[in-house]
Length: 167
Image 1: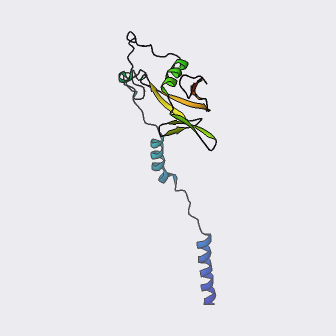
Image 2: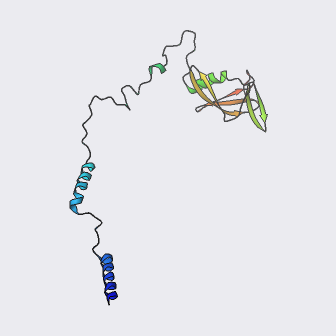
Image 3: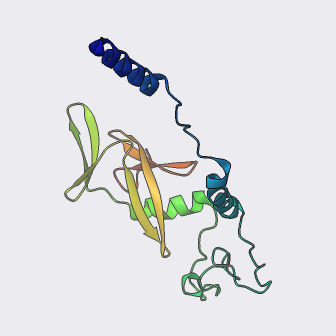
């Protein structure tokens, strides 16, 4: 009998522990109040003083859109007897074409190449030519046995490989 009562007592204790009053996952409101108040204070955006009206702007300072004085070109007129600078792309291209003088033409594997000393250029290659302190990107658009064609922007000019002959 004693064993029965002991066994019953153990079962009752186990049931009380298993089915007893469960603890709440959320603390009572009194314990949560300080944490909630801190969260409310942190969630409020800080008051920002307005900036001064005359404060310089770091990303758009006065005169930023003006050219740098060291980069400006002199606007003086050409001296007497000196030709005026070219105005249109066509005029620039004509001046550049007069300065480009390939030393020859070679055909390798069916592809025509212009020879400039040790340099070989094919159709589609670009030349950077400096004229009046300005760099121009000139493209070679055609090469054949009679001559070659150069393009600057939308203007194109054809030159003979033999100076004095027109292709």
